[in-house]
Length: 459
Ligand code: PLP
Image (cartoon, rainbow, N blue to C red; front, side, top):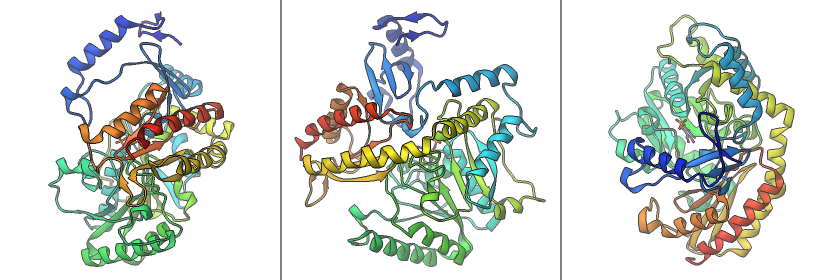
């Protein structure tokens, strides 16, 4: 693997001059997300292919984060690259009010894999915008304003999406109009309801949600938004029946159900949409990331007949210049072709059940710092603790700097071993590209196994 510069010139590794220029430009002029600008030093990345990317020194990293759980088909997938190149050669952009072949085909294919009754797609440029628009639709249709969301959720960083987010990232943005109301979702390992089984946790979480609805006033609530499997905040798989219970509560109170599938949609747990595994039918599904592995920014909302028909004779108040961008949609259509041809959903289910799950369950036996493992498909969390009895997290909630040292040391050991991990607070998440080979998966897991001995040192 070489570093190919933008003029097409190949440089062997190490490419020290090129690295210095990237670093200087970045530190001089790029303002980064979610960071204190003076305290960061982002690693320059030279190249990527499949499940691996390289720095400018030639170090290879197995990508166990999929670049924010985004790159479902891996780096530089030839089918996606060629679809974008071909589309750029015939029609690079077209405004949303005109019809276009790839936009229409992608919408049809998404509708085909959506739950029955969800037939229309509104395209956005990413996940937060998708949630913004889903909420706007829900408010227009119901004439109500409040939206309920979970503590321990992430819905994006635009103004409505961050107000619905249930983690510390929203704190700096607090001060909305009071229409965002949060509730506790199911999380048996740290149950807010003193439950001891998944069934109990699910049932009590539903009672709590119903109480919240009743006390907020059902007639004021437009929608409930839920990540089908909570992602960044812990890979929390809902207990059996929970999401069906949410659907029933929504029906009883005239509330719309928005499933946020930005992270789990398009194969992450081995389903087109994760909701297929839980038997509930939302009114709106939001997606992004895996729809085209982020090669060109794309997101959207899948819309039920009930919501769509409201706008049959009433104009929908909203739109984006790049809605349904042809380059992004061409990559989306190619994504469907690759999924179908290569049996991606089946391989995700197989690798998850046969390779990842038994390995992680084994860590419960061998690593004192591993408190719980949970997940499905190629989407797992390993919760690290100081003490298994008390479940005290390995680092305090929302820790940073020296307080986060045990997790920083664990992540450094993983990188040293050639795996790029996804860590958040006291958890490691496992979310490699869905095209990862079995050999790479096993190798990466064994590097993480080794790195966990560093975490064990703090337990
Ligand atoms: N919703 C969920 C569940 C997410 O995980 C994310 C991003 O990680 C978003 C929404 C926001 O998506 P974006 O960063 O594309 O705006």
